[in-house]
Image (cartoon, rainbow, N blue to C red; front, side, top):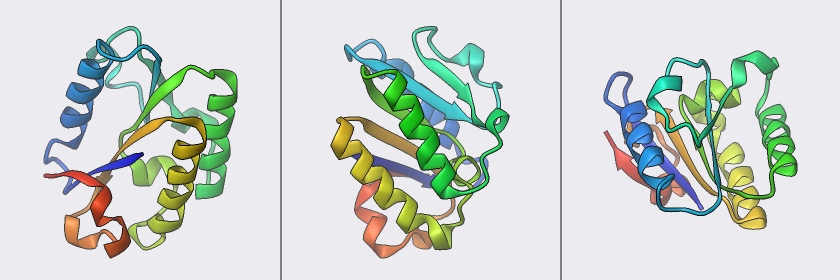
Amino acid sequence: MVNLITGKNGKGKSKFLLEKVNTQVKEILGNIVYLDTSTKHMYELNNKIRLINVSEYNLTSGDMFIGFLLGIISGDHDIQQMYFDNFLSLSHTSVADIEAVINQLEDLSKEFGIDIYAAISTTDGDIPESLKDKVIEAL
């Protein structure tokens, strides 16, 4: 299942994700991957969580991002959750193009049994109507 956390810059989306992931790591049996555009949250994450700095991999499109995720999943069949901070930058998409990428993530989530949490810098009103049911927190 894909879960979205939305809000303007500086409203606490990263903090929400960090609290969620650090709580979940104690409760689940599988592995957790946290993708970000830097390593600035490295010391805020539990050491059992794999942090990946996506900016090191020269991704330039939503399709490349999905391919990158499939590569991560193929290397670790025990992934149970994935967290994406600063999702629009990670996936190289805009709010206008987000629906297609989120739909691909939903398919990936169902196929591999992975719960996905994505923080998106925007207001709830900017999210396409078809994705509003995926918003679990609007800050």
